[in-house]
Length: 264
Image 1 (cartoon, rainbow, N blue to C red):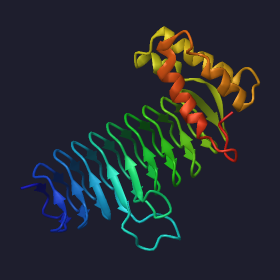
Image 2 (image 1 turned 90 degrees about the vertical axis):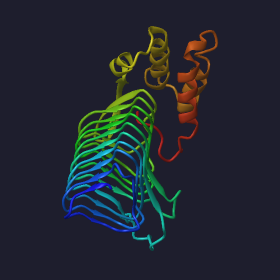
Image 3 (image 1 turned 30 degrees about the vertical axis):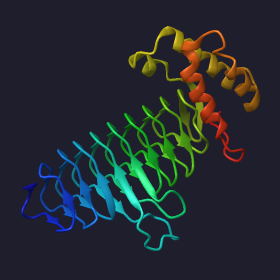
């Protein structure tokens, strides 16, 4: 049997692997599924159509799967899906999706989520991210792999955050943040590329040089966004090792809306 504390309330219809542990006074609803090795701490509420993968650690006073903070929501069976090997610290709140989008809020694998983090409805968070204390995503925000959000970062609804980005403490994102960029401010402004973080992840000198050239095109040459995209598209012509990073940047910039733009 699962290691369920006698004071916890687990609905008989919930699907918990036999290796799942549930701490004192936690509440788990009927549409919840939890995979092998996941540990649910005390005073945790998991409700709604919530699916949680393997080997997650969920700390006390966390709320997962509550209905979205969206006045248009009318009880539709939307979902929260959490992957594997995530750490979710105290007082986090992740809501299910809404019918106005994909209907799913999603957290990938191997993420480190610190205390008081909020993922609103329909957010899509990738893998290997770090959210420091009180980082907050409004609805429909997309966050790429390896992004790092500093404490008290606030992200406006529908904003996209590219892979390998980093935000400073108390940054306010009102526009899309392209891959690799470090930003800071209220509203956030681009300060540099995340060079030190990329070095720590094993990026070669050649790849870093390509990323530096993309940063120059976006932020140092006073180009329009379309002109910068054209410049970036040429950066891997004779240097194929740059191609994955260039294509990631171009794919991100291709989806930037005229209304929102990018962090400048």
